[in-house]
Length: 362
Image 1: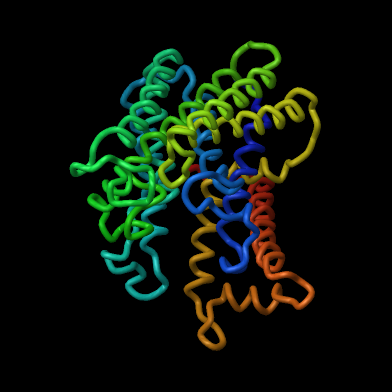
Image 2 (image 1 turned 135 degrees about the vertical axis):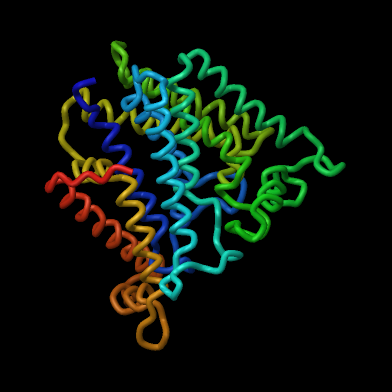
């Protein structure tokens, strides 16, 4: 398509802004409940953010690779981009400001957000350029059903499997066996190995949305909203037997989050691409350098935590307590205002990059 679909750029940029907001509160001790992840089963608004990004990765794949020939050149581009994303994620997981500037090997976390994006992008792209939508739908259904059967019905070391945070949980068990100390937690990783499989399905559902957007169908916003509502209903019904869970990226979680993504995108699409309303351009600027903005935010946040000032407290803590902790603010509001300030900085950075036509492609 010669004309860009504004809503896709806005959606991508808004998702990155929300990722930064939920990742950088003033203090984790005081955060409003909607800005925290669910403790295990269930979901909060924060739990929607990462699957929203994987969903829009799938949608973007349609625009980038539609009608691309599946040859060695295309495969090479997909592989290189995937390796770049994985490499950036591993760098974030291993970096420290102290010489030799990398953590001890045993302390490095192997999985991560960027690593999952890289892996999901790789497989979703390969599937898209090699199969039609009907085959992709079959693959998506097979992944969601297969993951449910694996997690819920295949015995583990002679025990019935569980969806709880326990040693006989298949996703947790595989993470411990494969990653050992290189995980986010000792017993599981929210971006673990087995749970990356249904994460690919999240991106495939985004591909179906992209196919609708490039089609000649009328009332696309109605189709997207209808599809979104259906996914949300199906996901909540499945929740009764396969709980909605971000850490496990359960099949019900895939459907519910893709459903909400379609609903939100349908609204934004109707307002911008159909009605031509001009709003939220700042998020379009973020979307144009999405991975760059996210990487910089994660890297600089790490620096602010590592750098010590004053009485040995981190630069992050010093800024937060010096500026945002005030008697007339409740602690949660102080923490939120810090996070909003951080987001505002990266919105401004994205604006400057966009206006100077600097687009860093990863």
